[in-house]
Structures are given as C-alpha cells and as structure tokens.
Image (cartoon, rainbow, N blue to C red; front, top):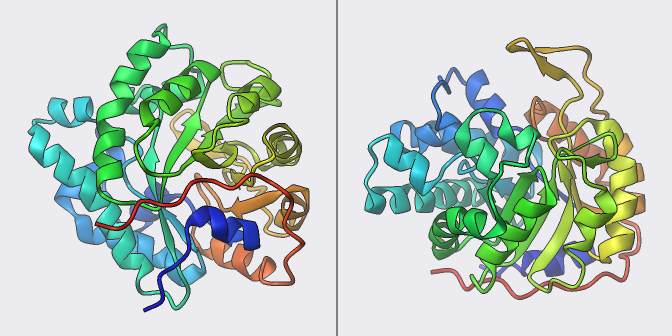
Length: 316
C-alpha cells in the first residue's frame, strides 16, 4: 500500500473534509455519555461504539478523523479509578480506533488526536469561558502527560481544539513542543473574539511562525463566526486554516434549541478564503458531512502560499 503523505503536504494540495460531532453520533447510536469523562468513558466501556461512530463519518466522506480523547486526561481517568498505565492504553486506543475506521476508506484518511482544553476536562462548561485563574506553567503541566501519551500512539496530528483563550493556547503549544507530531490549533469563538474575550488577531498571532503547526482556525462556534475567522487566520498566520463550526443551534437549559444554520454550500466561501480543512462540531452528523463532502468535491482552488508544517511521526 502506498504510504500516505503528511497532513501538511495534503493540505497544500487540496481541501480535506473533517468529521463531525463524535459525541452526538455516539448518542444517536444509543450510548450513554453521562459522567465527567463523557465520550472518553467509552474508550474503556464500549470501544466498538467509538469505532462505529468514526466509521459512519468515514462512509460520509471524512478524510480526517478526530479521536474520542477530547475530555480525557490523566487526572480525569485517575478520578474514575483508572491506573496510569491503563490511562495511557486508553489514549493509545483512541488513536487505534480512529485509524482502524480510516483504513476502511478507499482514499487516505488522517487521524487527529484530540487534546481538549482544561475546562472540558473539568466538565463544568469552562471551555466556553476560559480564564481559569491558572498560569501558563500550571496549564502546561496539566496538558503535557496526555499530549505525550497521545503522541506516543502515532497520530498524524494533534488537534489542540476548542481552546477558549490565548493563555491556554500558549500552554498547549508549550506542552506539545518537540513531541514529534504536527499540530493544529483551533479556538472556540463568539462575536469575533475568543470565548475569554481576546481579539482573534492576538490569538492567531500566537501561531504565526510556529513550524510545528500545520493548520490554525476555529471550531465549536456558530457558522456565522467562520468567514471573518478564516480570513483573519489566513492573513495572520499564512498557514492552512481549519474550521469546524457547530450546527448553529444553541445549548440552553439542558437542551439544544433554535434552528440549524450549518449549510454545506457556505464551505465554498470558506475554502475560497483559505480554509483547507473543513468539517463540523456539535450537532453536525454524518448526513451533513456527506453533504459537505459532496459540495467540496468540485474543482479545488489554487493552494495559497502558506507555510509547510513538519513531517509526521513515523508510525509505530
């Protein structure tokens, strides 16, 4: 079998379709995601369900799969009674499950190991506020163990995702420095600013010049936030842009409310502005990813002159 190119090289050649909301797909499959570990609990309790959720997105046309490790952490696993060695195995399993699903596709599929923010691990909605009162050093120390565990599993990229503020982004980048795996950095935003209220220009400026980053952008936000964010990320960092917004519904009073606003046709404009990795987050299922893949299947625009990321880690 021909070895697939590093993700950075692929993004320089074409726009790739990212998957959608893994947790929502698991719920649709009948899984119970209650508890602090959320979907990460299924890495131990029902790995087959995680594999099937990934496979649903592969069949929809996703070319990049994000692992089920978003809410996983050494600290969270320890609170659930999971020993450190077993926790490392669960991190590795998250990568293997996505890899196995991707191997069912005819085209290359890349695996992005999810590294969610500190607030997600706290399971208190803190990823939509940021400003935890922790220093860069404290957050770096928190993130490093799981970054090391995920990197050791050999993903194609580490997805530092749903990052609510610049302080945590700085810490995550520091924790991942030298881990041997390319990175993508994705902020969660509202009203044109990070969730912590910082200007997006400042947030993206942190990524400029970081050779380990192969893509920068936004996720877990309303689709209306994407156009401005794509243009700003592209112009500030000169890197390929990643975007995967929510459906447009809002989670209020314990339930999703309001109309969906995720329109795959909008992705054509995002791609024209510099987006090279496009998918969906909360409430975006395989059906919308299939429509997105179909929309983006037309002629690709010329690649912009962004920076190239580092080579991927050889598979173990």
